[in-house]
Length: 312
Image (cartoon, rainbow, N blue to C red):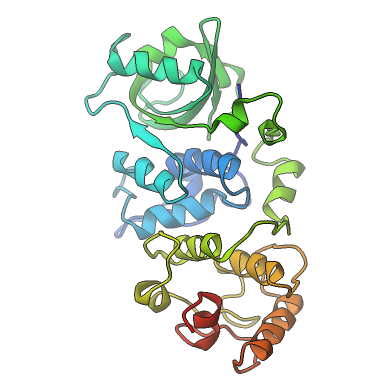
């Protein structure tokens, strides 16, 4: 089985980050189990720089945060699709209290095949009301789980029978075969906890191998709440924000900017999501080389953004 990276919604790095619908004040720590479950899958399969902050912002930007509740059930399929991950909702009627159904069978078969299952749980072992978890394995009648809210033994491994009685809704997440093949180097997914040093270094990694413009555009679109299709157009440009050492220096779009600048030969050091002196120098160098005003500011909708997005 392939265990995804483990994130906790209560991790100090993001537990106080906003996750609210209009008219409320919630945080990832209090209501972000859905985006946290999604982030674990995306960070493992597509982009290790994705965190619950990334997915929570995307959810809010696309109106998937439910007022005074958690995350709408309609969130997972489009969120995964934004990163090219196949995701399927298995049921639309509540299965709580039922031990068997076609959805149960499909979910168990998916786990046996090495795929993952996102589940919304009802009252019982995992929650007193509602809670999203990520299942990544099935073996000898037991399921293996990344729980966004807990690392307690009974919540990260328990019987299929108990899970089946308490689950309400399920989605399958397709894990590419390259991850399932023990002989493939790509299958070496290192498990980590949401607060481990391994996880922290992954988020701050400056690895930009293969980071092309299409992926950069997708990451920018996620960060600014635009339609995520990897194709820059008027909507994407219109939603860009001004970024510099003095303006929006910690906006989530800074990290993809850092990665892309480094990939283009303008090194910024670690992609830490903070626009500091190295970021400023890299932006100025890029601007000078591409005929833009070399002031270190990537101004919303203006020439530096147009150049980075391939619009000029």
